[in-house]
Length: 116
Image (cartoon, rainbow, N blue to C red):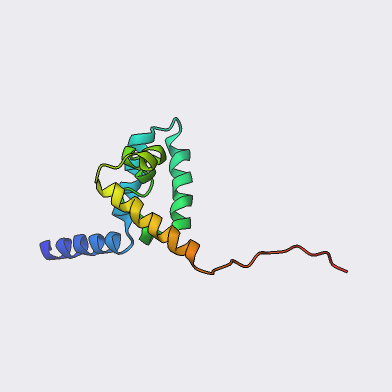
């Protein structure tokens, strides 16, 4: 009997893990703790829509709080150079942007035309 309980527990853990459920709840709780919305149910519903959009496999504990981190403040990133890991992230982002600018890539532009 004890063996079947252990197997059921392991199967449940495997199911939750394979569907990234712990990461989803970690991201929701992290965001709730920081933002403290007046209507947490509506807030969670909104975040669940965002999770569907980005894909559950791309969600981790900082998915919704990453932009709120003080080191990621756009003003700070533009003006402060302190050798932190966030400076390195900014440098990588700038390199990616420069490589895009240097490429000859031109996106297709959707044009509206009138039916004749």
